[in-house]
Image 1 (tube, rainbow, N blue to C red):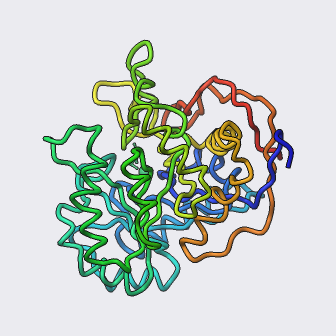
Image 2 (cartoon, protein in one colour; image 1 turned 120 degrees about the vertical axis):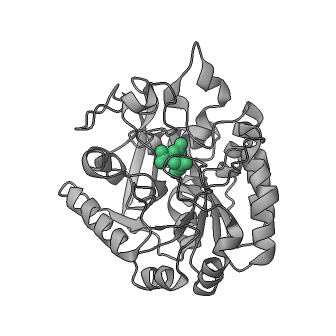
Amino acid sequence: MSSDTVTLRRPDDWHVHLRDGALLQAVLPFTARAFARAIIMPNLVPPVTSVAAAEAYRGRILAALPPGLDFTPLTTAYLTDDSDPAEIERGFRAGIFAAVKLYPAHATTNSAQGVTDIARTYRVLERMAALGMPLLVHGEVTDPDIDVFDREAVFIERVLAPLIRRLPQLKIVLEHITTKEAADFVAAAGETLAATVTAHHLLINRNALFAGGLRPHMYCLPVAKRETHRLALRRAATSGNAKFFLGTDTAPHPIADKERDCGCAGIFAAPAALEIYAQVFAEEKALDRFEAFASLNGPRFYGMPANERRITLARRPWRVPATVPTAAGPLRPFLAGEEIAWRLLP
Ligand code: NCD
Ligand code: ZN
């Protein structure tokens, strides 16, 4: 490995929104070009709550996969107040539910049927703990009295810490962490808690949302925080600590749904996410730890083997496309039109 190339086992993306229909068709190649496997978020409309729905969704993903791309979607269950422990266990044993996703009700895009009170899900969570099945957490409280920039830190205090005390054996991934509080909490917790970190949260702070005007394509949830938090995330991701791994939270919405009054939360990161991570690790002089973050820590936490094939990224500038066409209208990728220093070699 020179400072201009890095070769690693094929990475996986442990947090992806692939959507459905025309959007799925358009965005899937961007994830499948770079990642061997991905955890597929279940926040469709209606959400993926049953084994049958997840099986059908997986079938649609595989049908949309361009020939020649080797990609395995790991589908998940959307947790509701009414989720049935037996259905969750059946899906896990059948290899259809790789994990369960907890959205606090109304926390983010398509979370209206999410959990209103974690206590209502204890029977499911106890079953998952017994099975060794991971719970993936959107870690934000939804209380309108809590400042939007504090919602992750308050969630840790009010919901996550008590949950871990109650069910210490439950494997939990705190998804898309955005704060120093989250990075510190995860690092200090036991082996059963891990976290994903997005490429965009390693790159931007909240100033990016207001740079020269309102920037809807920089808006996602949890929203980017101030610079001290971004720096803490960079330290955590590049530290070599096995509790932190790659999850892009690529979350495409048509431009028309982003650029309007009450625009949707979600950043379409997939077109350049892997390359941005490589750039961040290069900037932090941590390319020797990139493979652990991108390709080893995630599978280890999920209890899956790492991928065997290798990929190489090189310092070879290219430009992110300005738009990506879809039958549901064009998408604007993260860093549209900008130059990226690193490139995945074919
Ligand atoms: C996601 C989406 O659009 O589905 N949006 C986002 O801002 N990240 C939902 C989520 O993961 O919060
Ligand atoms: Zn997400």
